[in-house]
Image (cartoon, rainbow, N blue to C red; front, side, top):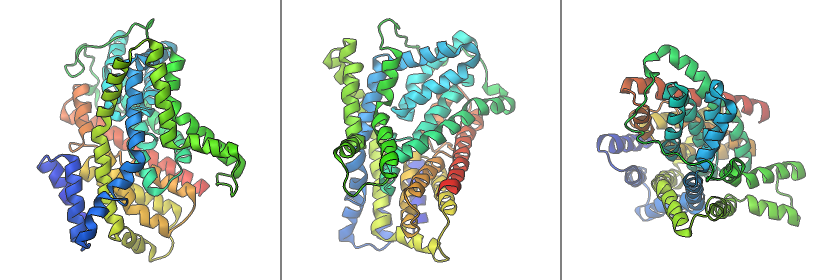
Length: 456
């Protein structure tokens, strides 16, 4: 039944071109009926606390405020400052690394599509100035944005998966940073060397690309400073990292029976919704009021940031609806029983299974977010049947993130965004983008498996 529902979802999205959110909700209802659920209980499974409400209720503020922070930094010229400063520091010979680092910093607080739109003009201007092909720098930019999207809260998919599985956000952030840095480097500068050899025609210098249009520039004398721009972009992570390290040092990562006031304050500030709220207030001042931008202009940036994530937020909710049916119907437990009937699964096997299931969903459905959330619903019961502690849950969440990136092709919007922005043919897009996403995914699961074997 699960296979039939996934096939239905694929047909609705790819053949009928139906909106992804609508397709997910329809598929959730159909799956519930196919599984023989009581019709009276289906709406609550799809929309209630086990389904869409579970995901949106806890994560909506994180997604929306994250989009607003990213847009405030961009509109104030902060992102432009970060990119230009790092490029000037690294010099022409190490431009790839400068673009990689700038994209990684910006990608932490900005969803993939918005990050691409924002960074492409800046990177294109640098490529023309340095007389190198846009793709030479663009692969590193894309690898950094994609790695952040797959592994790092507060990005929508990792946050939603962590929420579903009950993963410790702070631990996931620390482990995710390690994985994302490695995948960004391998998928960026390292992969570029290989790609230039087997697809040299894609790396042609062009001084005009229609999809990029006019390159918007800022006067560096009027934009926020580098330090302030970076601080605002990564500020949501500060509380989470501090809290995680504090807990590890003070209580070994576990909540003490009688936490003191310092612990309670730090724990409160590290709550993702609280951290994002404080960070947004900071961004309004650092990227708005302090830059002498009037509140109407700031409000426009906030609205644009909210609009940018609205579609993704609905898709996340739709994925939660499908997950709600899997859990409420008992399908998730049946899958767990199927894989636990022969004995307890080892942590490495669970991690590999999570990656494989999510990879198949990614290839079939296209959306990384949908694949990640659905994959989490599938493996949730297995984790419950095979308890190995908080670290395994974090590594499974990261494995799902890795699987959600693999083999992007024509059913993924990212495929076409990449094709247009880099002015490539469909064949060249397969050669570069599809392989790049696969390299990130495979590199990620290798690192995660090694970490699981060492620490779980």
